[in-house]
Image 1 (cartoon, helix red, strand yellow):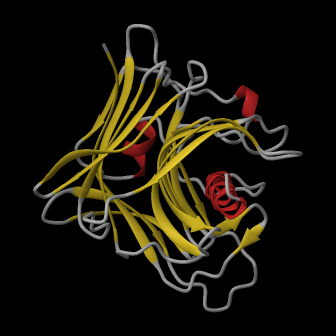
Image 2 (image 1 turned 30 degrees about the vertical axis):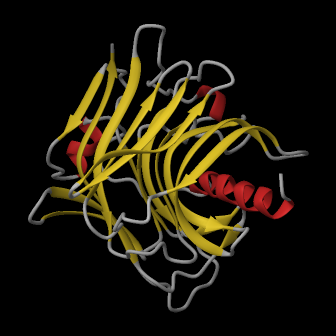
Length: 279
C-alpha cells in the first residue's frame, strides 16, 4: 500500500475519533434512558425532548454551534449547525446527537445495535448539507460506531459515511467507511475500507443513505432523485462486530488535538430516520 494513500486513510479514520474530546458538552433537558429496542423510527424531528425520548443524547460545544428544527418542502428536519469562528482561539466547536453516553468509560458504554446469526442491522435516513462540497476544517459523521475514544480507549469500529479531511490530498472528501478493530498507537493495525461517494451525488440536496450490517460484513448505499440505491462500499468483517450506536455529528477537529477555525459555516440536515434489527 502506498504511504501517501495510507496516510490519507489513517487521517480519515482518525477524524472519526474527533467527536469525543475531554470537555463537557452543553446538554439540554433530562438524560435519556438507554433502552435497547429492535426498531427506532423518526418521521418528523420536533424538539430536544423528542430526541431524548428516542434515546439520543444531545451535545453542543461552544456558542458557534447549535441544534435546530425546521420545516422545508421535504421534511420536518433536524439541523446540526456550526457557524464561523471569526476570532478563533482554539476552541472545540461541535453539534451532535448520539445514542451513546460518552460520560462513562468506553468499555462501559451501552451500545444497542449488533447483528446476529438471524438478524441484520439496517439504518436508512435522509440527509443534506448546506455546503455541496465538504468544508475544510470540519468533520461531519453519520455512522454506527463503538465510540471508543476517551480515557482508556478501545479499538475503533465504524460503519457509515463521513465528510472529513483526506490527508493524502489535503482536501475534504465525502466517503463511505467500514472499519474494524483499528488501533493507531503505537502502530496502525486493523481492518479498514473506504470509498468515495458517486460523482452524481449533490450533497447539498436531499439524498438517502442506507447502511446494512450483518455478522459477515457491511453494505453502504446512496440514492438521490432518479438514481436508485447504489452500492458505494461493500466490505467483509474480520469477525462478527461488537454492539454499535448511531450518531450524527459536525465538529471542527481535523486530527486528534488539532482544532481548525470554521471559515465556512455548514449545517447537516436530517430528515426521516429508520434504524432496525431485521430478520
